[in-house]
Length: 253
Length: 253
Image 1: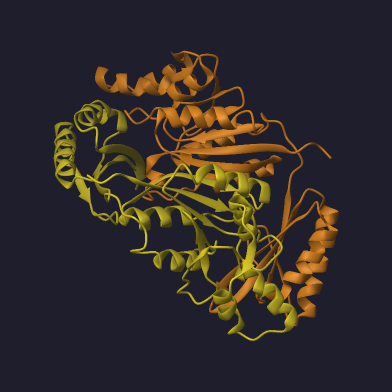
Image 2: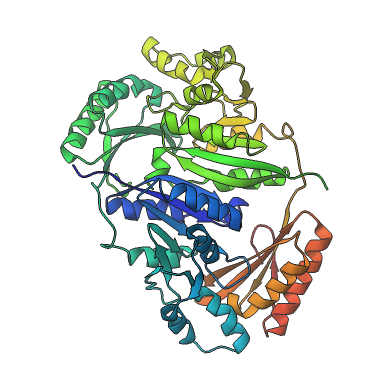
């Protein structure tokens, strides 16, 4: 089996830390790159603070195969990600001609254009990340990928990376819904987990239409092991007097 | 002005890292404790891994006034938070009689009860966090508060902490909506920010009914400064030919 390829996500933005904005970038990135065989092992949410961005990037970039950041690459005073990433790598900031060309396609007054051109700043030596949503590009330097914070724009940038990153084994996931309390099946799950150490078995209680139940999730890279694990989980549910339902990957029954 | 009181949130759970589950705990905790005068400065999402939990807790607990964790305190094999927190503090794990009493209120077979009683494990010396949703309690040890991962249960536990934590200055927030691009107003914002260093001014572009606009947000603890900042922002918007609309805190116009 190929070595696991790992990733760390850094969400940069005071608006997430204040609770004003609900982050959705973590789950989107995790799902998309998960399908490419890259596993998110760690995420952080940090403020728009140069010192903290520099320190965080330099702490995580040697520890994971890939780092993805979102946020702070717009045209205003609080958009300090590009400058901070350059500091982390100890390289100068340049105005990238390809981003500049995209920005200059839309006419504007000199003052507005000057602000917009701040979005062309990248660390020297950075590669560009295409932006199919039409605006200025993101960039990557070594293993750090810097994307916009706006979900729609980030999603466009991320999609353009498909096929360009190293792939590890893809983790597959199967989910069984059972109207049982977690405790009723805890023992059986622990036993199955011991027999299949390469499968990650999780249980997630839920409340639906006033009934308590548990989602039993098996994740792993070997489909045959997942089949065996799911069969044993379904049998354990039946032994407890409930009929298990396997859910599709989109959560439908 | 009182010293700032800071917090770090640790989301423990493979289901968030895989993207299977959309986290909502960060924004909820940030908003609730923000209203109590506690500012979230940092968040992490980490896997159900004892070594990583221990290392993370010991890294962040000296750095923030409060640490809040969610996840991993249920009755199954992957619920390792209590044991990991005890290791981080180098104290034994005990079965807490008050949590045990809550658990024993609901009858169950010996096997199921044994699993459920795993939820009574806490580090020796921990204080309990009430659980108004009716299940087993959470716990706190020193400045680390350990809560359930299920949002409804976490929210109940968090609400029980009201009035029990130190309070700093409450940050107030005012938001203006303007149908302007960020770049059009970037210069003005930078100038206002320079004049009011204690106010945190952010700009967040949005797309609504096919119109691009920007939310201009001012956050700070001094309401008089916020009034001055918002007045200047609204004037800058009007000078650019648009009529600004101040939004209520719930985001309505």
